[in-house]
Length: 138
Image (cartoon, rainbow, N blue to C red; front, side, top):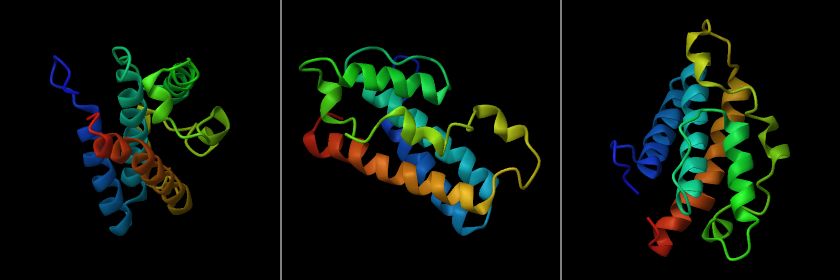
């Protein structure tokens, strides 16, 4: 799944998930939440990449809509890996994530918010990336 320019979305998802978990344990909630957003971005790009080149954007709602669209196509490989509960409503927890939160002051992301984001992406990682690896897709 390595891209020509060197991007590897499944590996980046795992790396950012591990960072996010470690940062939560260190009570660095802003950084944990920031990395959780990148986990979701990489998961979505991995799902999209199964059938077409991933988009070079960071907007999670746009990426999730694309993944949902691909999963709804008959016999599309993406459908196997997009969880059945994957819909826009599930993104209420992370809809405010954007790559620019790295510029916010300390405390912008609360412990509760970071915990929800990390928990959510951990579940999606298991349902997508782990399943793809077990199936030999990636």
